[in-house]
Image 1 (cartoon, rainbow, N blue to C red):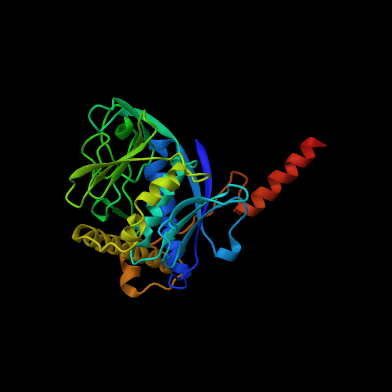
Image 2: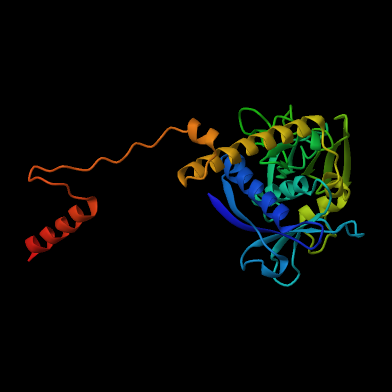
Length: 316
């Protein structure tokens, strides 16, 4: 299994350290619990101040919205090709961060592809860009982990592996077909880039071909992101659906119950529990002394000391 190291950080003062840590923890849970087994890739995800990003970690940077259309998304530095991700801030920025993190883990070079039948009649077999979240990015497909909204993602079945489902949360119903507000990109034999884009109702239209020949050092994924510049700002600012609001409410109830259970148990063990809690908790049985054939009672500590001494005499 391939492992990566990712630091979630921020260049905006609108995110407090507690929120940053909560989102990083939810992303870590998503990678380990939901994503790694499907795609054979994992990551250590931490929250860090921008000034304290650990060496060797890929920065996932949340920033105030920039005016440049091609600023958001996946990039590499000009000096040494170190990857990094820019995500615009919004009330639902965790969805955009999850979206970009999973894309990065499966296809860190930004150009890995798999062959499959074209969505456009007459093109035959084409090469699809492996982009595990682009086909199902909409907030309607998202789900909740520990009070944090995260992105749905494609399974390997979407790109041609046998079986179903085609996405983890089930938003995609057909192989190589985008869900609402989704995009699927491919390169055809004419060396041009094409995209199948779905609208809010899931109606699909094919766009292209776009020539990637003049992109200079721009990665193929950077070109794809530039063709849909509104994608990440739309995710970060997406209003939550009723389903997600209900999921968040249920999650808060579960976390409160979990917090209460541990607080009460710890208070009981240290003798600070209320009368109601003390009566509800079973009393711990008193520890009985150990009796031995030679007579008398020996504590565990004395017994251990005698065993050590006997071992030393035997060794000598």
